[in-house]
Amino acid sequence: MTKFKNYINGKWVDAVSGKTFKNISPANQNDIIGEFAFSDKADVDNAVAAAKEAYKSWRLVPAPKRGDIMRKVGDIFTRRKAELAKIMTREMGKPTFETEGDVQEAIDTAYYAASETRRLFGHTVPSEMDNKINLAFRTPIGVVGVITAWNFPIAVPSWKILPAIAAGNTVVFKPSKDAPHSGVIFAEIMEEAGVPAGVFNVLLGTGSMGDHIVHHPDVKVVGFTGSTEIGCQIAEVCGKLNKRVSLEMGGKNAQIIMDDANLDLAIEGVLWGAFGTTGQRCTATSRLIVHKNVYEKVIELLKEKVVKLKIGDGLDPKTEMGPVIHMKSLENCERITKIALEEGGRLVCGGKRVADPALANGCFFEPTIIADVTEKHTLFNEEVFGPVLCISKADSFEHAIELHNHCEYGLSGSIYTKDVNLAWLATREMEVGICYVNAPTIGAEAHMPFGGVKGTGNGHREGGWTAFDIFTEWKTVYFDYSNKLQRAQIDNY
Image (cartoon, rainbow, N blue to C red; front, side, top):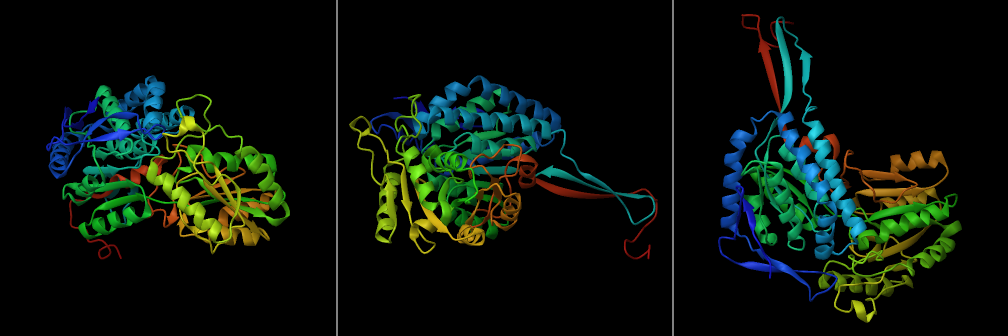
């Protein structure tokens, strides 16, 4: 069995304890991908110490030269795109056409981060005093702890890691225990690109090891993607320790279909939004809100498409929807479906494990639609992270917006309509960080801000220029060349 090690200070090393854990493919529980280092506090201490030491010199490297390395990272991701996509599919399940898109997002982010190293703009502003100039510019912060989920094992880490390093920080990265191989490949690529030893470190292991990263006194920034429950716990710790923390957490995203919408387009949108990545995206369309005039028609058209989806191993080029990540997730899909039906939901299709004997060893759940769900139902409010879509009826545009906003989360929202006035009203009224018009709730682009409001985030935005707000501090400089004491707010008024 292949064994995979941590990457600390430019070297591949076993966990200090020598312990390992196995990574199992969700498409076939008999397919063991390998044994991975099971890290603990001692490994965290070693990685953080390496990152802290490397920061002393890395922060002084001119930003455009750091950008040159980021450009090489993008080149290597491009070269290894197809190979890496298959590795990701094997360990987390989604079809290879999706994992290739996952890698492409890292490619885009690498090139964008490279270009931003020549645009880390500051401000030069007039002083209120004579012969004095005021400046403000960005500086790196230090060691950044990055903790991410398994569903986008390359794209999401790239949103944090690459801007953080481009800005002059160093990184200790903990990939999910359900997608550790992708983290290993990330380290291989960074090493080949010429990232100096200690600037980027990868620790493999479970959530408890991530807790050590969050608590470590030399970790100055924490970037987290995962559940709202864990994110709030991390925020509490970082608040007590006065650390900067960026949280990307849960979602319960809704697509609205108005009665004037292009229904064929809207159906394609919800099909992709709800069942792409097997519904395992923070931006997945898990609620569909349909105007009463087209409610039953939409259900009929959607069911016709959903029952034809090709379910199977993501490595099969014919597969349109892969497995959920593990048996626990499969059981959760069964649990929430049972609750939804008990509370009065109408099963349109799906609702159970895939019966195909060829898929019996995998974690496959049928794409499921449950109609007649109201805002009082559990399924309307609880994030499932699986291929389970609920449909609710709206009496009007105002009612649709009310239903949309009846949720503790606020990541992405979507509306399908031909009425430009309603479209603009929706973008104003939806309580989300990302809004789509005549497009599904998924489809973020690497050069734009990504993040949500309410229970989804804590105000920071990954992606685009806003990512650098997470990983830099502002330093203000007053340069007085008057050769005399000038007291601001006193001597000039």
